[in-house]
Every structure is written in C-alpha cells, then in structure tokens.
Image (cartoon, rainbow, N blue to C red):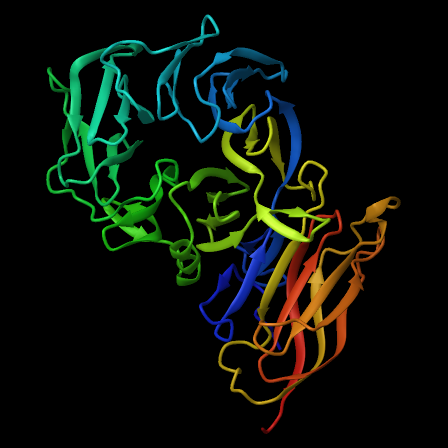
Length: 477
C-alpha cells in the first residue's frame, strides 16, 4: 500500500494527531502526472562559499546594476561580478537587520537610528544629515521616483525629493491615519504603498498631488498588522508578512487583492504564538519554478519556509554534528546577484550561493529529516497492524567512488506511540557509486497501533526520494 511519505512540516498540538517533520527537504509535484509517483522529496539547496565581507553579521544585501551592496556589522561593501570586494564606508550600528532600497544611482540604508546614502558613481557613503530626514528610520522603499521612509515609534512616513535621496523637505510627510497604532514598516506592492502598523494596515497610491504625491486608497483597511519590520517581502505578485494585531500574533499572510489570505497552518502558528517573533526576519527567492517565503526566527533559533508552488511548509536548519542539534538556517538576508541566489550569514561575514547540487552548508554536515504517519488517512483505526516491509524509492548510487561519502547510509527510526518516542532504529545503505538500482528496503518492522516513521541522513549526498511503499496487514483487535 501507499504510505503518506510525501508532505510538509506539520507537527500538531498532539503528535497522536499528526507528527510530520520535513527538515531540509521540500516537495516537488510531478506536473506531467505520468511519472513514478505524484511527487518527489528533494534536498534543499546547500551553501557554496562566494566571498567574505568583513566579520559580520551580514545585515542586508542589495543588488544594483552589476554590484552587490552588503552591510556587514558596521561596514558597507560592494561586490562586483568578478567577486572583488571593496569597502565603501561604515554606518553607526553593527547589529540587527537593515532596510535597503535604490533608485538606480543611489542606495539608501536605514538601521533604525539613521539613514545613509551610497552614491553609486563615486562609490561613497555618507550619513543623510538633512534636518528634515526622519529620526529613527526603520524601513525604506522606492516608488515613482521617491524614496519613502517610516519614522520609528510614530505613525509618520517621509518622502524624498524626486530621484534624490539626499533631499528631504520638512513638509513632505504624512501619517498612517486609519487606526491609532504605530507604523511598523512600509513596502511598495504593484505600484501601491502598503503601510503596516502593529495592529492594522492601509494602502496608499501615487495621486500626483502638487503638495504631497501620495494619498490613501479609499475604503481599504486591513485589520491585521505586522509582527516585525523585517518580515514583509514581495513574492508571487503579492506581499507576504508575519501578522500581529490586538487579538494576537503569529499568523502568516499573503495579500489577495487588499485582503489578507492566511497561508500558515495551525502547526506553524502553534510555534509562532509561543515564541518571540518581534525580531523575525524574512526574505524571498525563486529557483527551479518554486517561489519561497523564508521566515527566520532568531530568538526561537528556527527557520520555516513556505513554497508557493505546493502551499506547503518545510523547515530549514543548520546542523551541529558534534552535539547533534538543529539551529536556524545560516542565512540572514538574500538577493539575486550575477545570476545567483546569494545569502548572507548571520554569524560571520560570509556570502553564500544556494546550490541544489551541494549537500553541505559551506562544507559543514547537514542533516535532513522526514517523519510521517505510517498508514494512510482512514486506516488509523486503533487496531494492531503488522508491518512486513517498507521500501523507499530513492536516487541511489550517487555516492562518490572515494572519500567520506563513498558509503552513504540513511536511518529509519520507528515510533509505536505516535511520534513521542523512537526506540527502534535501522540503517541502510544508499548504494555505492553507480549502484542506481540499489533498493532501500526495511524489513521485519514489527507491529503497532499508532506508528510513525522517521527517515533521516547526514551523508554528503543530495537526497532525492520519489516514492514509498508499505507492506502491512491490519489485525482484528
């Protein structure tokens, strides 16, 4: 019979209900519907080292023309296509994320305390000292020739001079006015300006006014706000964000027109509601037809990823092979540079490239995990089930001929109490080099009333799984 091997991350409030984990794996559906099975589980991309910018942490990256601008600690760098790293200057803070935007000739960086302007033609950076520039600037975007910045701990946002981030007029500001909550962050979406408060959201547009260019869209008012200034991103022609309001926090939304559409699950929300999320960070990227919303939770030391193509969540994690522990993913921010999806490290000054063919994170061992209920829905009736064989169909024989990865293995742990404990473990080979018909077969699996399987591995090969079959017989009691 089919065992429900394919799926995402969904650990319910009770593991007896659902105990699915999907760590460093994600689902890809077979769109032809004529393949070996309906989908495959493939390993998430590893991290290839690209360059080093200072000592870190990497707080923000921004691609403009052919250059990647990087904020690392209190230093600002540029990286060209030949990977030459140039120090441009410094800013006044050294930790926490920054917000960056550009108009093609200038880049503005805001860090919650001040704003800084990079002039691309001269490769110089200066603090914005115009008296009209807002204090405590938190987020910045660019819209119809204007830089727009919100002032922290207020409802106000400010607009620059046309195509000049160094010019600010003391009268060119407005306030989020639909609700009394403070303005947390702003972003330009489909040529409209979304203003996220801590409880509510409203939308403005370029009305072309002579005194102030922007005006509020009448009748649009969203009854949810933003949990952190750095967790809203553009993706799939929408804005995605981690929400908060007067009723609670911890639901992830995407915009559907002007309405928030919930994309998180009860399982994800259970984690988010129990953790500190005021420091949450998000970025988005697209690869191989998949569009990903990556939600980083520094305080919780976790990372969740939503795949728009499947509407499924998975976990991404770095791994400590000495202590055997997962931690948040190494990335802190991302952009598309020189044909590559690049990310910055949250602990050092490294810039990496996502690579589907790399099974490690900058050479460090990575662990993947998939756990799932053994029986399909409808067959879990509490009766004893006798398990003969479980066969996992995988890309075997992919190991190198020599070295540490020449004899890769996988682990199957078995739980008979719904995923609470896993006292039984078996190991199987993933096949030597060239053994592409090698079978991943687990036998003599005993009996259980509430079985959960957990498949995992740390071998430095990219895991790909294309199906799973289970031989089991249900007893009478």
